[in-house]
Length: 626
Image 1 (cartoon, helix red, strand yellow):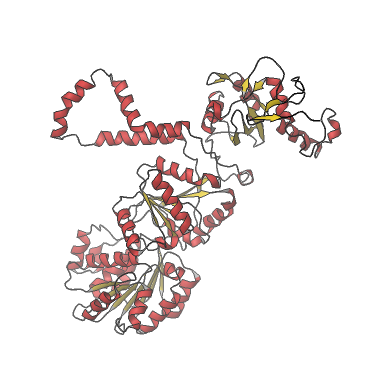
Image 2 (cartoon, one colour):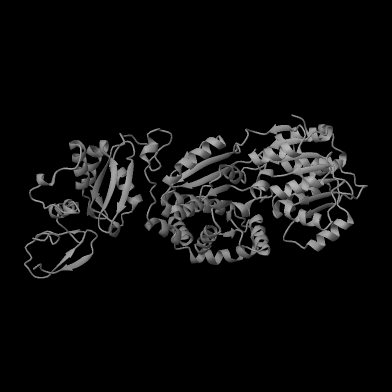
């Protein structure tokens, strides 16, 4: 590996490089810079966002531009205002010690009159968005006949945004003998067309694998119900207290809705989409750059060209239709050699799209378990403890108050003091997750047959995958939620964790799916257990027994085989429930000792009006039939 000193830069450029803290060239810089300094050949460089492309073309341009000539000698095209401003800022940093190099940024949303006046004073390097540059060319303000080098940065994004005609028009305005450099994350057909029409025998440089995602970004996904997406997003944010990332949505409406929900729930978040004015957009971006915001909820179009360092996460609230867009999204994190995380919220209907992205991006997605309330509370508490450990305490004002504070708290021992401080800090947070429902990922058994991913609810389990539905006499009114049910089962079962399927929680009872191979081990233990001072009763659902018998008989059973039941349009599917009520003596979801069941028609309560309870525990009044 060569260093910057060996590349042939002048002392002024090397001084700027040292001040910027560049230790050694990044791969794209190591390959592109020598070619730019030693030759005139056109170059196509395929590399992810954040790999050092700006310095790769910017440092040679700054050194080779003649400051004694006021004519425009280099033109850099980029897709967005934000990237235009960022590139200009970087070039000025590179040129800090080189003299009076004039670098001008021209973009939409700013005063075109001011930009025209600046062009009249001379600009040796122009950094521009295509739309604004076309306007300036039409007004005869931008003169490109002396341009020797053209750089197309983020070329694929410019073409995706519909700038193909503008780029063609601009490239027709520059001299034919100029040098063209094209930088792109992916090589789409449109990018290849530009290269074919306007570049001469270009040298192609590929950093990593063509059209692949960044290698220092890990890719994971959560399999969720569509209705649970926002809840899972909140859990991700809570599980990562120091998260600093972008949440990508499909539409402007969805973007604003998700951002508003996050703000209302107390998160440092805001929205970035096309309905914002330029002033609003600038305000949001400034807050995000200085980390006053932890989460930026954005559409793909609005986020194009964003250049923000040190992002920890990219979250795909919705998977993109265009697979190349995913590459751009995850390229926002893991920049400049750092690691990053790309997470996707995926429901069952999006699984095929996920597999297409895996194949095209040449990466593997890991199925991740949805963070449980217990895990989140622990992570938040440890984050707070770390802050307590590292907080500065040498303040004279505090030291003056310590004796009085110590006196007031002297009656509390160490454990009680810690308990009260933690409760004061986390009471609402802990309460939300302690009493809230756990989110269970849907079971995709067809996909699981290939064995490519682990069960998202249980890290260590075994079984045949023959899931059977079971009844339990506990519901939401008893404080039973998915986390509590999973804990109840596994705490009363020795050995490997028990994998559960679908869980249906009712008010006074519930159902859950479990591998039938574990039933002989699990059910007896549960029936000897207690939950919140109630005896637990679990048995196989009558519905499952009927289905099992039907499968064995090759289809539906003839209703004539059940002489005690009348044939109904509904198929009598609720009879198993009433039988269970009679067998276990349950009234309104609680046990009763004497009397016949009020749930059945012939319950011995006479022929007068009677009050019964439906399967959800709601009272209803029925009149005598005539």
